[in-house]
Length: 360
Ligand code: NAD
Ligand code: IPM
Ligand code: MN
Image 1 (cartoon, protein in one colour):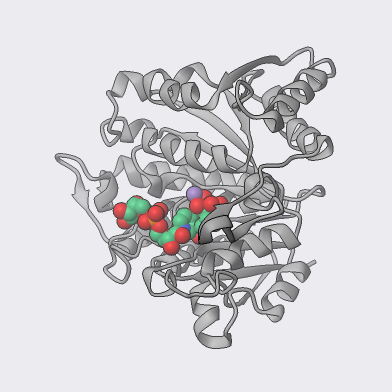
Image 2 (cartoon, rainbow, N blue to C red):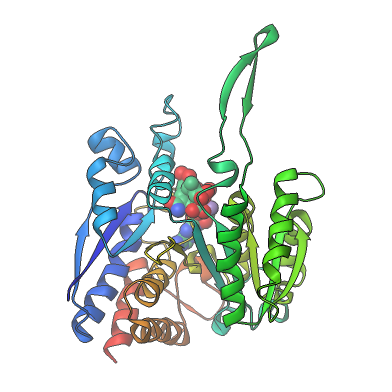
């Protein structure tokens, strides 16, 4: 039976990195007779330019109909000054996450041993690093109402957003994290700001409540400011981290650097049934777009996660991850993970190397 994969290249480096991931997918599709069929659609700034909106109805329909989605990245300075805040590339991404109910965002930060020297931290701090950030993706301050910019008394403008989670939203992301921890190192750290924000007092309470059902998982709590510090001080103390939308956004970028580069961090965003969208954690990198400098590995690793979680092809995902490791063994590096004695390669050369490794 065939499976439909929707490809959303997006903006900036999005099309460049997705091209390389698609080459990898095309190859394994043929090698392993996966029966994948691909369609492509517009999202973000490229959709604004072509159709006037960041998430055209046709793209949303295609996303709903697909078995899985692979996204590059959206955004860029040319759309940052659009006076209508609804017509921004990022709204397309938030809209697809929200409309598809992709609340469970898994961001694994794994250090390939070959990259221990590419990290900005000392090799001994990061070697063996394998942590999973579970980020709530469709709620919290990103989506809370009311929100906006208003004029208050005296003609003073004020901007406001609402940080809100109900207990069901907290419970369902909590379950994703406890289940993940159960399959791994059995340690879960819930990150909040319960010393200041009521919404996270409730968050902490629900995590405690859930822990009664997961007695095999050791639950701890940490304030987000300390968590940011601990991630760069001693990241290996963590196994699974669960947190809300905004804290998860920030902490995952910090965790990315532990792996050598944000160009190495893949992600999966899953709904209640495990259907998902897969994307690198990084953005559209306008500073290097169109120059063949972007690291495609986060997107290639996202494609591997897609095969594992949504397309029932875990062993093919293993093969892709092994191919990435092999390429790093060959000392090939894009600029973001370059270090002394290594061979500098372009985006497409990195893709070539992964494809060659898969061909064996
Ligand atoms: P960014 O992640 O795009 O870039 C931050 C830095 O990391 C830049 O120096 C960039 O060159 C580098 N970088 C990122 N990905 C890389 C890769 N694969 N290989 C090598 N280097 C890489 O973050 P930003 O600059 O804050 O945002 C740029 C745009 O991307 C904004 O419009 C933002 O809204 C958008 N964005 C989109 C997503 C997404 O689509 N998921 C995520 C984050 C940011
Ligand atoms: C991410 C990005 C997005 C987010 C933006 C582009 C909306 O930073 O996927 O990490 O904040 O979720
Ligand atoms: Mn982010």
